[in-house]
Length: 247
Image (cartoon, rainbow, N blue to C red; front, side, top):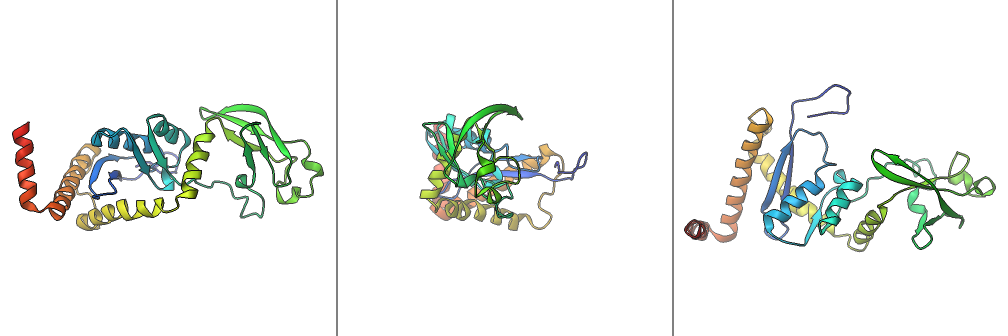
């Protein structure tokens, strides 16, 4: 598993799992050796859509999955993402206004600052493959709130070209705050159960191929036990026989 240290790493694996909210069955899973989840949102969502055969899907994930391009991929595929935004700025801790205090006016493609001034779009740049627009005004030097806003010459607000997708998702989360509780009550229980079964050592195998096989067996065992709890062993056996006969 990669770590933040340059040229360093550790022996470890990152398990992804998609769990349905109705029956708490594992829909799909993945094992990677990346030390973060930021590139897994659309991958797991698309696999879940394929596994369930649905054309509409709500995808709930924690803030570790927040990444603009991944969220955009989900929306373009007809998937509705619900991911809390990561707050990377420390302005609030410094007693300064942060980006949430600036209101975006879509009709004019401008921001309105806490002092009521308009920040028009000035220029754009490409950073890490993303087109980022910069908004600022030249009146900051005369503003009475400048000391609460920035220590620089003027306050600049940056906006990704597809940030409207992120704004729409944040609005959904603001008006439906129970979604994150639903996520915790669904997937956290599954991971807690699997970790309890696996013990403190977790994976017994080494190398990604072998660990993937081991994880698949754990998922199969979990789903079988879950279905037995839901339907009973006799109904499960009958369903398996019907499936085998049909195929």
